[in-house]
Length: 124
Length: 229
Image (cartoon, rainbow over all chains, first blue to last red; front, side, top):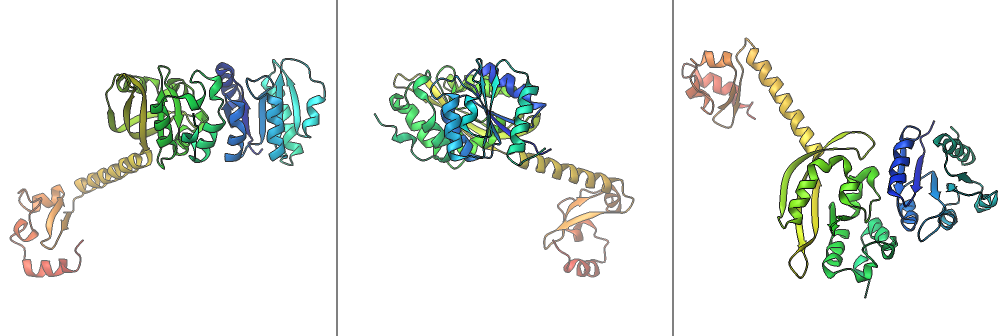
């Protein structure tokens, strides 16, 4: 299976490092970013397959960030994490966008990233 | 006040401009102290790895070349230095404390076990930490120039090990072995069998005709003539 690179955006340091360490066993590479505003710059500097972002972030929201990334990189995959239900509204952002209700198990995220990989034509 | 000090600087320049500094303890970048602005501007446009820390929490800034050194710790803009580099805290905390107390620090080789690519990795750096003082004279931050020398250190270690192996091999060889160098064919290395041949005299550095006076010098030196290193 081709390893995927995840860009994870979360403003809480503990959650960021916990996620990075937790996902290490599942995915070979996770880049964790504290500020949504930095993310579009980072996305341009190297290849990422999937953006995983909290919806509630200080400054730019995860939804705005996803819109910004997808406007420039329409093939990008996005998983938006939230503590409340969004129904299917987030799917309107693009075909490779998925919602994940918090708290979540890493296996759920694995399933969504695999689904996105299939859609991106990067099948496991 | 202007943000022009953040001009240029490649990807990290763009990250610095995008970062929401106004929401951080440091406040809007346009209102930073002049020392911090100057330090950040020099650092961003340096072609070699440079980083800077500022304030009591040692908030971190760095350029493109240093982002490569950070590996998976990048991005880490505005985060405390010792939190970013938690795996080497034991080695670098006291060095940074000394720099904050006003002491410029230079080390030509520090060995650090980093986890920047997901697993423990031996690394070596030479670096210079320069304290940066405010108007009152107190240290506000530290400017850091560093060069990663991991490959050089490991290559040197392997060369030395290879040489040691060869010396060991020559030492136990029953044949006499010597390495001669220069137009005078001076003895650079001689194994125990060779020293026995030369009656145990200290021949290292001596021209071969003096080291082995019994030699039919002319014939031997003619033989050596075309084989000088």
